[in-house]
Image (cartoon, rainbow over all chains, first blue to last red):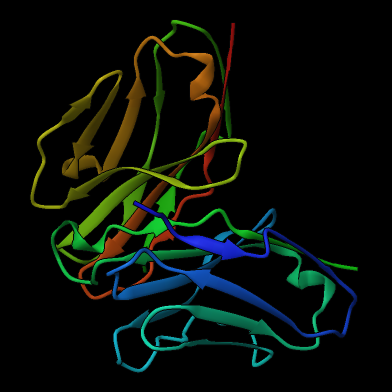
Length: 117
Length: 114
């Protein structure tokens, strides 16, 4: 079956511009996560969606970052007024649920490499 | 606070050597979950294994084996008879019962030469 897909695979933007990154989770997965991978900080959690519940935004680094998930499926991560320190690979993951048992195993997409000039 | 430490930043071995990747974790929870992921040069994180804190049985899958020891808070990963295709960055991760996110270690870069 299809895995997690993300688009675009690469994005180059100028400082100050807004960008939108898209994630399509595995069909049937109710939980969706965004992470950021950068050389200096490693893999960092950004935001989590579970069904229709309010998202866990505890990992968002600033109010320039936001995300939404429409219809419990596709998610968009938006970064406003991009800065050079936003350059990183943004990874999306999904899982069947966030409970005990193997349903919480997160499966990752290929990522979007964002470069802010 | 939760933390995952992978003390080995880089490891280089020659094909057919065995190699062990170390992972030490910290958590106050009695129920938690441990994971290993592989990130090959293509960049995608590939799930390898999930282990519950209450299941200390070691696991073997082909050339891969995992040693979980709660007494030392370690979840080490061994590749037997390594191959060039094993070259990748390997991440150990932790999630506690209440948490949502995975807490990742910094990763260990494994290079296997022929």
